[in-house]
Amino acid sequence: MKIGVVTFPGSNCEGDAVRAGTVLGHDVVRLWHKDTALPAGLDVIILPGGFSYGDYLRTGAIARFSPVMAEVIRFANGGGYVMGICNGFQILTEAGLLPGALIRNANLSFVCKDVFLRVELPTAFTRAYAQGSVVRIPVAHGEGRFIASADVLARIEDNGQVVFRYVEADGTTSDSANPNGSVNHIAGIVNEAGNVMGMMPHPERYVEATLGCADGCGVFESLAMSLEAIAS
Amino acid sequence: MKTYTAHITVTLRRAILDVQGKTVEHALHSLHMPQLTNIRIGKYVEMSVQAPDAETAMELADEACSKLLANPVMEDYAIRIEEHEGAAA
Image 1: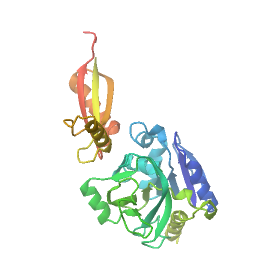
Image 2 (image 1 turned 90 degrees about the vertical axis):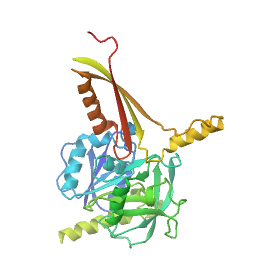
Image 3 (image 1 turned 120 degrees about the vertical axis):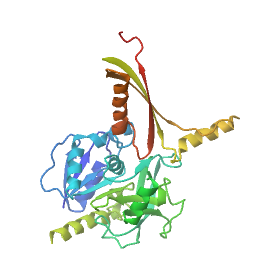
Image 4 (image 1 turned 90 degrees about the horizontal axis):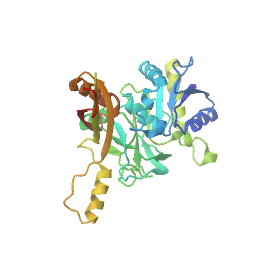
């Protein structure tokens, strides 16, 4: 598949995303925040982690108005797969492509460690994982506490839009396994259409066993499977 | 056209736990000031606004808040408009 990875001023995980896609055998192109057109034949756009625009005002608030975001929104509204990782997730909520918001971690600390995630209902981004399986993926953020109003949260849950939850190694939720205080232990969600996903943990950092863990591969595999299913 | 100053405060919505405010509250209580409670920490934005009248200045500042300065999912904002000091009569 052909993946576009956007670089905003202050992105710092775009290299990891490019490398992950490349290592897994995909065609990866770099996109620039000032781009006003997307290359032909893109299957997936990744908004990577980092501190776009220095996190000024709010995380993702300025990046959301970058020229390339108009194209990303058009791509998403046309059914293209868009994945926001960490700061990318924050940008997607600011852009209104995903519901809710991400605010300062409940313990006020920047958290940088491996966490366990439970794969919830199968989606285009997670179909390669067994439902309910537990994966180990690193987080690195200061503002990852997912919140939403009660009615929006109910809709997200009822629609099965929760993709990943923070859990213990045995798959059970607990406050101690929740690194940032996210409501309902939510680590990642999809939009109602199922083609836009945001998650705070970094699957792109764990795609090679030699680097410690390859549990993140499933996200890329899932997207490739989803594209194949559409094509056939 | 007149020049106004917009004083804007942005705070987390009441329904959202302001952990920063809570932490500061605990610190103040440890400084023996238990009378100080419900501490909310937010942002202050100040800007000059060129507008024919205060009402228009308020509308412009409100648009800035709703489009960029505040995220309605998590934040409330308040605007105070004042005519710029030293503005030409």
